[in-house]
Image 1 (tube, rainbow, N blue to C red):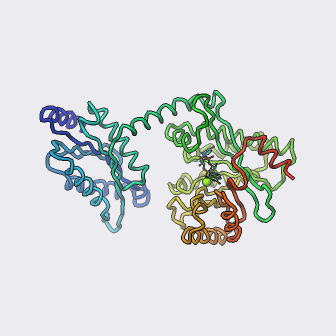
Image 2 (cartoon, rainbow, N blue to C red):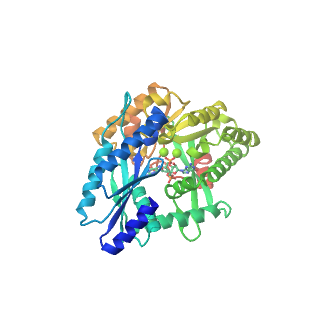
Image 3 (cartoon, rainbow, N blue to C red):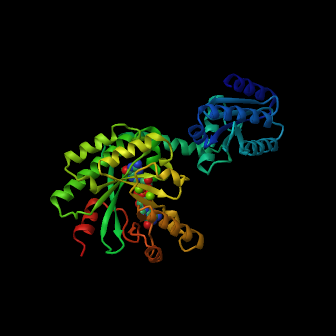
Length: 413
Ligand code: C2E
Ligand code: MG
Ligand code: MG
């Protein structure tokens, strides 16, 4: 592939005709691999390669870089509408069902596109561009193409800068933990809190976890940051338990990233912290997002070990992660947190029906149900009507620094 790309760049220089580089990554290939096995997965890749070949001209190049990643060079482009035609035919051909022995599988493709010479001056840059454009296509919701722009390059550079800054953030004590109250329906009192990481950067200001947690995940820094959050939150809990009058039914919820769950010693470390800080496990809950639950055996094993300590397990952002309901039984789950997006549109019929159905489902399986993102009295009233028992959102309180949380919890009348 590299050799071909170099050749095509030289040809383009000579002929003056541009070339397009496509970077294609299959969506949901991992699911096929995990559920049907590697052999069927390999079959699917072979069929994909054939289909890609059929969508392109003899003189184009189709290559597989590794995993489920393919690159395609469309050379000597006389006019750009050809590129659109090829892209369309690739998307629709990958979408066709794959017959793998007796099973049918479905995948889609995310494709990044970049042009030589208009977007880049050499092969290396061109590949980087196509990769960034593919990343944008994934982020935009998959099964689509995305053309490289200078903005993408800036966004990618910003991510790199953020990652470099993040490396020092813990050490420089720029990370801290905010606590958001979760209120009990019947009594209106704070029954839980969620610990949420915050990053105050001296020059860049407040950086939201929505921005830095994904960077921490991509770079592996989430393991250290996540553990620091756990330890900080548990130290706080120790103080409330032993120096203040924390009620016995109070639970502190802490978010876990998937890479923390791959740490086989996580349960041991947590057990150790609970011992050191003398915290009964029943005061602690770990949240894992629904989309991260799906992937494989190790997650269920790690969660089981955590659950065996007596710590509660919550499924976060429930309703967004495409998990099959039958999958849920593989996990020890205590709490379902219904995603904010349902509450956001709860005044509309469909979201409200969905919200009601999820509550009924959660209720009948005897999970505790928490609704996130309660912002208005209308949200609040409808949640109460539907019978959600735990409510979290700006309507009650934003996430607070420790002292503000303490005055809410310990001193509020
Ligand atoms: P999450 O776990 O779903 O946390 C709830 C998010 O919703 C928080 O955003 C919270 O501030 C926000 N929120 C709460 N009530 C409302 C409301 O009424 N309206 C709106 N619009 N938003 C509300 P935040 O703090 O920005 O955190 C975003 C995400 O970052 C969290 O989503 C969580 O997935 C992740 N995160 C935060 N801290 C950590 C951490 O220590 N470790 C890990 N692994 N992830 C973390
Ligand atoms: Mg959460
Ligand atoms: Mg959530």
